[in-house]
Length: 152
Length: 128
Image (tube, rainbow over all chains, first blue to last red; front, side, top):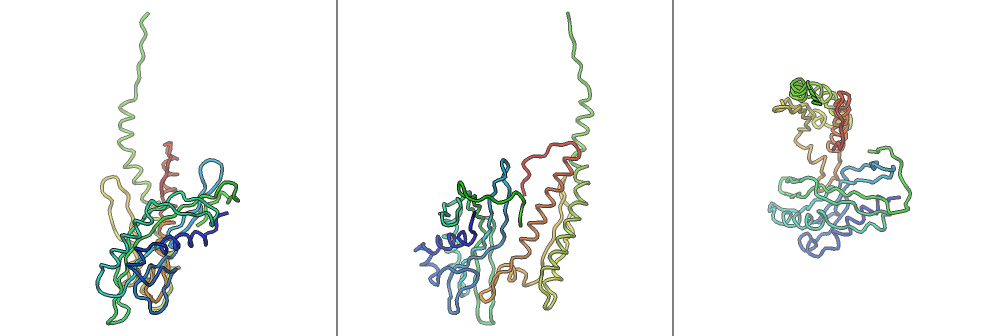
């Protein structure tokens, strides 16, 4: 059985382990929200997920779509642009160790782009830049099977 | 001994194949309209109502597909729809538009595939 929490951890772990990304966004990699005081960080959150039946014998795989953003305080978009490129290089069609999740990676790829500027106060600007990434996982051999019903 | 094989109906087949995409588009349009309406209802039900701007920003965009395309566009056009969907530095993302519109789009594609199948056309490899 695939443990989705471990899939989350694997994605965050891969990003957290990269020294180049840490240099670009030194506040760290977080799920959903960064701690107070952080000014340059990566946010990972779940956008959508579903379980799909395979065609042959009813085995299933799970598809997670993560929103992964570089977020930085300021009016310059350069830090988030560089971090966005680094995240793409780390994740798009790259390997991911999902042993702890009880699964094997079928594909990890960039889906679409996200970019916007946030004015959190009249004098405070934040840059958000990143994308959504699909992570599709199949259970490892002998793992418990899901049913064949598509679940959203 | 001479033998002869005569095959007929090619002109009818050609005419039928020529008409097929246009007839299919006409049949697909109401299916898309149904799913677009369901998408709008689902989005309006899912969005929180504080000022009502998020809910009121959900709308059907009038568009006409080019050529044989059947197109329906649903938009979430309030000023802060993207902040709600993707989050801010103080608020986490609330994935709403993308999951709902994606689910409805998949359902519409499968419904159209079933409609085409009912016309006697084998449909394989449906991508959502």
